[in-house]
Length: 147
Image 1 (spheres, rainbow, N blue to C red):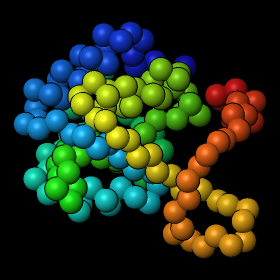
Image 2 (image 1 turned 45 degrees about the vertical axis):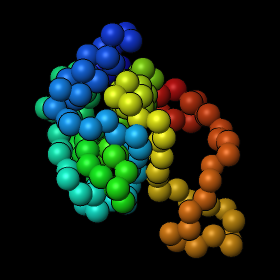
Image 3 (image 1 turned 90 degrees about the vertical axis):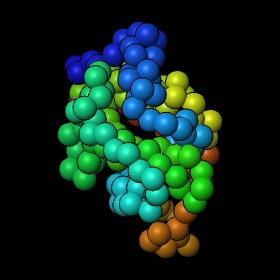
Image 4 (image 1 turned 30 degrees about the horizontal axis):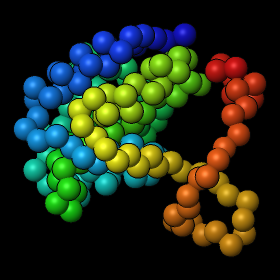
């Protein structure tokens, strides 16, 4: 199992590193799922960091997950976009999977939007529809390595 961090202090160290590199505290965090990483290109006044530049930050191994943190303004709101995330099926423990969310909170993010590409059973849905997930099934025994 891949483990990046295990203690609250580790999240705070990563947050301190990022705070030392940015000039404003983002209020909005967006974890860009498959197909939405281009959102960061609409931001202004950006500064980007490859995950490999951030001490203690793990690397995504899923195709299409760029592994980049982009700070800037999104329609005038200080924001940060994560282009790539980590999954338990990549072999990461859950503390590592939630690392970005914990770090975002430590740098001042108050609102979080998490996106993903998903299929739906409702025939009324069309490609590109936005839906709100109200609940989910956690079926780790069906998740391969994560089980």
